[in-house]
Amino acid sequence: MRTNITGLHHRPRVFIGGAWADSRDGRAVDVCSPATGEPIGTARLAGTADVDLAVEAARSSFEAGTWRRRPAVERAAVLRAAADHLEGLGDAVVDLLTSELGCPRSFAARAHVPNPIRHLRYYADLIERTSLEEVREDGSYRSLVVQEPAGVVAAITPWNGPLSGPALKVAPALAAGCSVVLKPPPETPLTAYLLADAFAAAGLDEGVLSVLPADREVGEYLVRHPQVDKVAFTGSTAAGKRIMALCADRVARVTLELGGKSAAVVLDDADIDVVVRGLVPMAMSVNGQLCISQSRVLVPHDLHTKFIDALSAAVTALVVGDPFDPATDIGPLVSDAQRHRVEGYLELGRSEGARVVGGGRPPGLDSGHFVNPAVLTDVHNGMRVVQEEIFGPVMAVIPYGTEEDAVAVANDSVYGLSGSVWSADPDRALAVARRIRTGMVSVNGAPQAFGTPFGGFKQSGVGREMGPEGLRGYLEPKSIALGRADH
Image 1 (cartoon, helix red, strand yellow):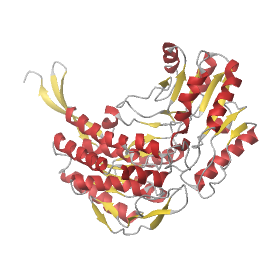
Image 2: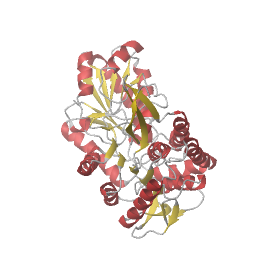
Image 3: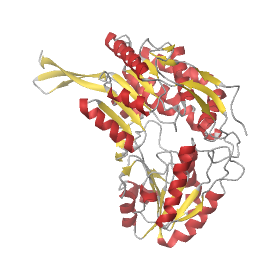
Image 4: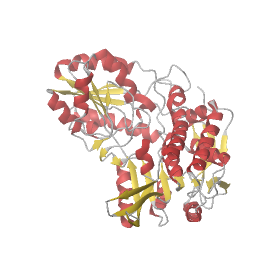
C-alpha cells in the first residue's frame, strides 16, 4: 500500500503575516497516513503566542490599509496568482492531500484540489465585477452606501476539506479586503500550508495572511481574541455553539457552517436502481466524512424491502482499501478516534434495535483506520443513530407512508444542511424539494451549480459560503449622508 509521495514532508515553521517564522510556543507533530499509520511528514503546530503575533500582524495590515485600499483588480490578480501556483504543483497536491486525509485519490483529483483553485479564481472575478458603492435617493436626500471589508477574520477549518475549507473562507475574505488568520486542524497541516506557499508566491501584502495549524484550545484563544472582528468556522454543531457564545460576548461577526443529517427522499415512482447508483456516492464521498452526506434515506413502505436489498448490495460491494488504488471506493477514516466514533454508533444502533448490514473492520487492513461501510435498517426517525451525525460511511433507511409523512420526517431534525428528492417526475421532485427546510436540496442527484450559496438552516449553521453570498459575509455596509437630492 502506498504511504507517501516523494519523500517525507517537513514543515518546521509557522506562517505569520506572510513569512515563515519559528513558533514561539507551538509543538512539532508527526503527520501519519491514516491508511498505514506510517509517517508522511512533520509539521509545527501553533501556540497562543503565535496567535498573538498573527492577529497583531493582521490588525496592523488592516489599519494601514495597504491591502484593503488596493484596487479590486489588484487584489484579484493576487488571488489568481495563488490559484496558478497551486495548479502548477500538479499531481503533487493531489498526492499529498490523499496521503494526509485518506480519501480516495480519484476524489481528491476530481474535487478536493480543483475546487479550491476554482474558488480563488471565482472570487477574483466576482470582486472585479461587484460594485461596492451605490447612491440611494428618497426624493429629498441622497446617501452613499459603501461596502467595506469586515476587518480581521479568524478562519477555522476542518480536516475533511484540507484545501477547499480554507479556500472557501480565505478567497472571499481577501477579495473583500480583509486580513485573515487561518487556523486549520492538526490532522491535515501539510496540505493547509500549501495555501501559505501559494499566497507567498503570489506576492500578498505583508501581514495580511497567517496560517496556523493548531488544536482546539488554540482555536478558542483565537476566537476570543479582542482584535478579531469576524469568525468564520466550519465544524461540528457543538463547537459552533461554543464559538457563537464566545462571539456574542463582544458582538463579533460570525459565519458558521456546521453539521448535518441530510435526508434523501425517495418517492414512490422513483427507479430504485437509478436512485441507488446516484445516492451511494452522495453518502460515501470522503469515506462518509462529509457534512452534506445523504445519510438518512426515506423510502415508501411498498418499496422498502426491495430498496434495502438493492442498497445493501451496492454498499457492501464498495471496495475498501488503499486510497491510491484507482479501484478503491472507501479509504480509511482520518484517525483512530474517528473510527471508534463510527464503530460506537454502529453498536449504539444495534442496542436501539437496528439491523446493521456491513460494518466491521475489513480483513488485511489492520494498520489503517478502516471500517466497512454499513446500512442501518429496522430504524425509525427517533433513534439516536438516525438523528445524530455519525460522520462516517453509514446510511440509515427509514420507511414512510404518505408524501406528507416523508416531508415531515425529512424536516424532523435539528439540522438543515442538505438533502435530495428522487422521482421519475422532476416537477414532482421539485415540489417536494421546496418543502424541505434545508439550505441545499438536489433533484435526482443533480450537482449544485458553481456559485450557488452553501450553508444550512437550523443548527446546521449561520450565514452562507460560496457565491455572492460568501463575499457579502466579509463586507460591512456603511451609509454616508450626502445632502439634498437636488444638489
